[in-house]
Image 1 (cartoon, rainbow, N blue to C red):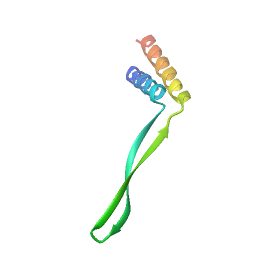
Image 2 (image 1 turned 90 degrees about the horizontal axis):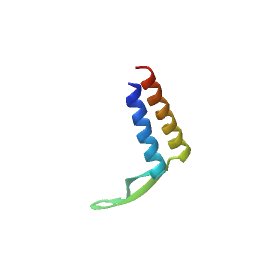
Image 3 (image 1 turned 90 degrees about the vertical axis):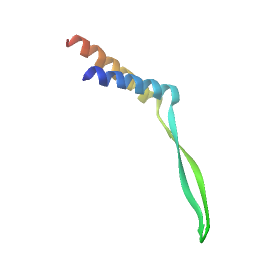
Length: 71
């Protein structure tokens, strides 16, 4: 169980360090008058701090090492 969690933390940490955030798109209604409907797409960015990615990688490595010692 700890081995899987350690691998997941290493993968998440690697992605967090490589991409440093993620972007998603939402649609908002601008005008909605009778048959006329206008919507706008907005892009939102959620930053992920590099320290979080590094901490996840360290925690994943610790879990992997401790799971190997427990066998």
